[in-house]
Image (cartoon, rainbow, N blue to C red):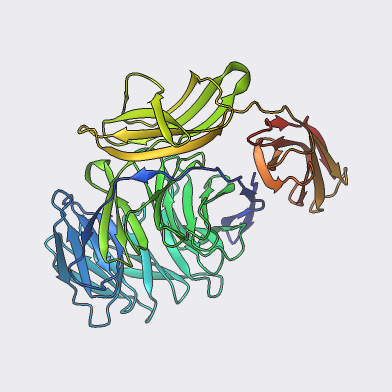
Length: 523
């Protein structure tokens, strides 16, 4: 857990995050999701920013051309509108302004543009500082448009009438990138620093009031959005994490994306109560979904040689749309996911299924098993209709042991009976061996800031897998077992009495177990 300590300076309250938490990875099988794509008429246009317009259409920027594109969702028809920014223009982000017009940034010409839904640019404003490379934008509670100036280390603000202000940042060459307004009533702006490796909160007077260092070195943070849980969520290009910051306490949590080197980039909060994100690289370009408790699903985007960038929710909240930089396409997929996890209790011959179902359309939900790759009967006779809001459910189904591995498959089907998304999880039906876990620490007592070595011992020693160390209910870290022993060095405990536990996360053949509470005294 992170602790925020207020300190007063020049009449302002500066908040500093002292501790960070790295959450354990949620293992999750890759799913399948139905993707529809539309070719952008101009070749090599590099579509990048995406927004749902006030007209119900999808609008996007073309970074390699001085154009803004429009997709009509019902037909997929794309129209392109040439910008007056100049031949070297590179439109980057696009949002809907407080005046219901389209506003965009141009990184090459350092301009902010305003366009109507007729495709006409009515205003074009130069940033005060030349060559500032404006990137992302957001709407503040003051009704102004706030934007990052990537190359000059500044945050900009512009009103709908064109009044512009720039606020220099205290760090040097931090490269501010993604930006978002904080929760309603906080009157704050949050932005991510690519090179500064931090999340920063700024008030509406342009003063930095909190800096939250990211625990992953060289993370190259990208987008940031306000989540459905009123926390700030962000992506890390190089850290390969999705992060969450509580704006009240500055507590920070990160979850690793299951696919290595996926480069998570675009991020949007969706009506299913989760957040959807793009993965720019990796072995297969994918669209990801993360619930507010950190369960990650990944779906191949169905596009050859793709590089999905920014992502937005479409009209009616039933689908996500994203821009594919590499293939020059706009793509869409239904908002649906199942959050499937599964385990088996051999003593009662019970298959334990957990779901975090979310979608924005009245799909039908079916679940079945496969043994040796061959599909078996449905686990329940009547398909279950699924609608919003998000439903978290657990089903315990009697299931005879196969003495091996089975696959649980769960899917959503549309009204025509066509599957729109599918997930699977592998489960061992072999009886698990019980385990016990003990925990020691050295030194104990310790001093504030001193590294404490926590040692978890799992019996039987043949058990394999990982152990997660907890400070109360908060994760301190996760380590891999070696000959029944896992260790964690931790130096971020404050002067107090702390309750520490260690949980062995189990494996196919060994059950989970948690140690008794260890009291760690920090003087």
